[in-house]
Amino acid sequence: MDEMTNSSAAVDDDGPRGTSDGTREPADGIGEPADPAAAAPVGRDRTNRGAALVATLIAVPITLLVAVLAVTKLAPETPAAAPSPSATTARVQSTAPVEMAAPALAARPTVVCRALLSQLPTTIRDLAQRPVTAGPEQNAAYGDPALTVACGGTEPTFPATDEVWTVNRVCWHLAEQGAETVLTTVDRETPVTVRVPRAYEQPLQWVPSISSTIVASVPSGGAIPSGCQR
Image (cartoon, rainbow, N blue to C red):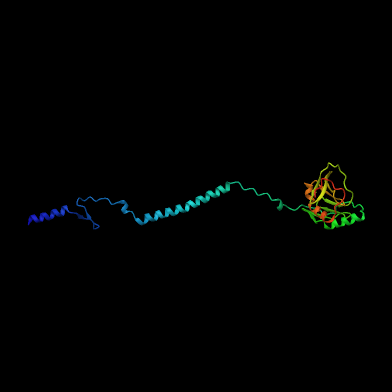
């Protein structure tokens, strides 16, 4: 009986002992440390990672936007485009009568000139027609400074070596007089003279519409220079 009791006591001394929280303590009394990773709360770790990812996704676009705004602010402003000629303001023109002489004409030139003046255009390029002080049946004026058209008179005399210019089937002689370029027809029964102010460049460019009206209303005639082309 005494041997059995001692054996039971030995088992009790060497075996694992219980702890206050109900877990069993190792026999040697030394407990192993718990795994830190296993002890960390899993849910909180995932929440922290998700919050960090969201913050990164928000911060990157904001950083890019700030960079773009900074570059835009520092970039030089684009200069405004120059207005095209078609968008410029229309030429300012006087509407006062233009002073012109009106010499007496023979019967035939009077008829021809009336026909010409009745068919002239109301504008020549961007020049509006203006009234004249005398002879509206033989004179016309356009723009400011005034470009004038005079029907009748005598044909100009000029050296045979002078150039003549054909514009819309009408032959013109060109001469520079003071601040004007004087163009006179040299192939018509009744001469027509156009005075173009020097302010208007390329004087021959101002007579195409006048030439077309001359062809329709003033017959050919006179000693036509050899340089005139048909």
